[in-house]
Each structure stands twice: as structure tokens, then as C-alpha cells.
Length: 213
Image (tube, rainbow, N blue to C red; front, side, top):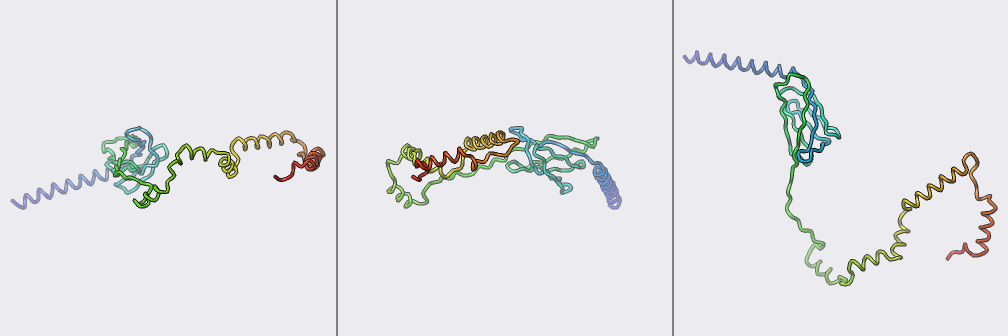
């Protein structure tokens, strides 16, 4: 009796293993071109550069800037989708597909991480706070500081340290273009040989306009 029951179990498991093996081979002989777009679940915005990993083959890819991806899979393959700031998501390729092409729209949820409240103080210790409080200028309010920053001396110092602004650069470039158009097709004008420029230079020199202040 025991021998008969053991024989039945042996036949059952043998047939079952053969069935599973045939199904496995059949599934892995059937290739599917899986394509899709990865979106955010709350805003429906396309997610760029999402890592797509096929767990069954340990191969993967990265979606493009528009969240599009495409790779070759088999039925029952498990895909993992991972992106920074989003939860890990998975997708199992259906085993009932009849065509070799399949398209999906996959959603990823935001991974919200709550951090404890941190109070930031401008002084590292109570002693530093007391020292800063004693040396504080009580009448140096925001209005007074703004007036000092907008004074003529401060603005002149700032203007001397920065380069030309956009309007000055545009004016210089426009004058250069006008000079090129004026002398197009001929030799550019050279003020070194211009008698009017020499006359103006000598008159300014005699009148003292070229003296340093």
C-alpha cells in the first residue's frame, strides 16, 4: 500500500515538474517589447531618468527625459521602478499576452520623509548671545542700514567694483555695429591721422581739461 501511494506521489510530482518546466520554457521563448511612460501619481507629470530593473534577468535601463522606456521582457517578469523622492514600485508582466508588444503607463508615488523640527539660532551659546546683546547698536535699525547702503558713497563703490550692465554693453555693441556699417567696403577710419581730433586734443590740453583732479 505504501509503495502504491509513493508511486502515485512520484508520478504526480514528475508530471507537475514537467508541466512547470514546459511553461517556463514556453514563457521564456516568448519575447515581449514592453514600452511605457512613467508618471507621478499626484501631478501626472512625466518623470525623467527613472531606473527600471528586470528582477528576473537582473538587467535594466533608465527612462529618458520624457519618462519613456522600452525593453524586452518575458511573461511573468517582475520590473522595479525607482527614482529619487519616490517609493519603489513593481510591475509583473502578464502571462496572458498574445502579442509581442505591450504598452503601459506606470505611476510612482512620492516618498514623503518627515524630519524633526530643528531650531537654528544665530549664536552657538548663551555666552555668545550675551556678548552680542551687549555690543548691539540699538538704533541701527533696518531703515538706517538701508539708508547707509543706498548712500552715494556706497553706490559709487559698488559701481566701481562691478562690470558694465546690460544697457552699457548693448550701447557699446551698437556703436561697434554702426562703426562697421559706416566704414563697410573701405578702410576703417583712424583718428590718429584725423586733424580735427588732433586740434581738439591740443585745445583741451591748453585749456587744462586734461589735468588730473
